[in-house]
Length: 250
Image 1 (spheres, rainbow, N blue to C red):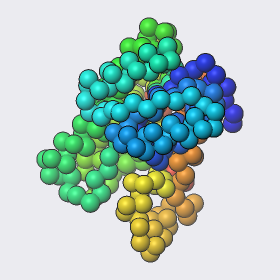
Image 2: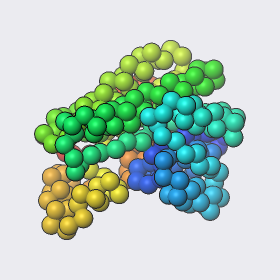
Image 3: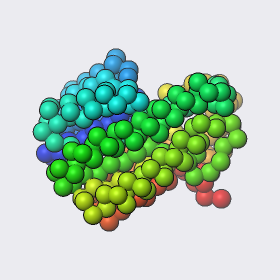
């Protein structure tokens, strides 16, 4: 599908790589001006260069989504730079695959970024969108927000929380012109996943766990985000869109 987002402004957190980068580029290709946000300034600026090098408009803003002042500065930058805010993809998150998330430091960090960060972003974004009378927000949850996971306590809990928070916000703003949805990706070929599946034999095992027999691509998740922001989904709000190659079908 092709979208016409000319004159619109999109904000994407966690946009230095993976799903966030793919979404930022997709918004720009559809004509939107994009605010690229991440804690990784080097790769965040790379995302901006990929957009501007192809003729799009984008700026980078460093932002730790767990910091309320930084989130407020991020949204203010979007409005100050481009005059409005139409779309937001709250994608920033972490996955502590190599640690025991029952331990308090890891648990606390996951909640602050994966869940509180989404809340802080939505709150700041909605303030602008409510004043405009329109807007679309998409959060990144996970299939781990729909099913249990024996090895990732905090990640699973936070992604369940993102889906609950999405549904709450959708109801809160349903009559005020703001739609709020989330995407629930399965295993997607991103730098986060590469850290775990660096060995070919392990990658093959993980790929085999998905009925389609492969990892998802970041652009496939980005396609879902853009659809949820577009007029094609104008009657959709509070929805967790599963994009997982059939992983949760059985």
